[in-house]
Image (cartoon, rainbow, N blue to C red; front, side, top):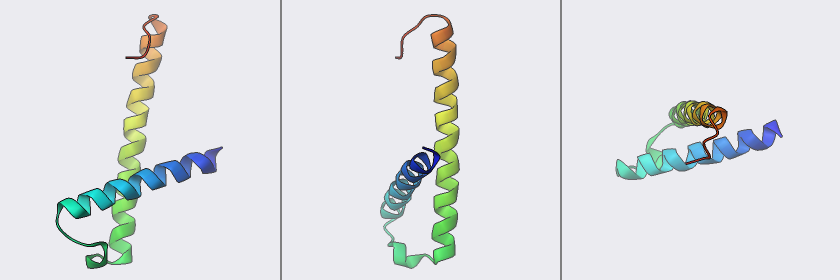
Length: 69
């Protein structure tokens, strides 16, 4: 289960990094492997932080009986 979640997060992070690289009008080959890894790791952290905030908000709303918005 955890491995599956990690794969989903990694795929989303890679897609986000590819979008950012395209927005900058560069190619992935313009970056070294280490730079790409760093970009992906940072994006994974951003995704996890976003999920944490959404989960906390959903929990608080559920406590007050409010359905997902």
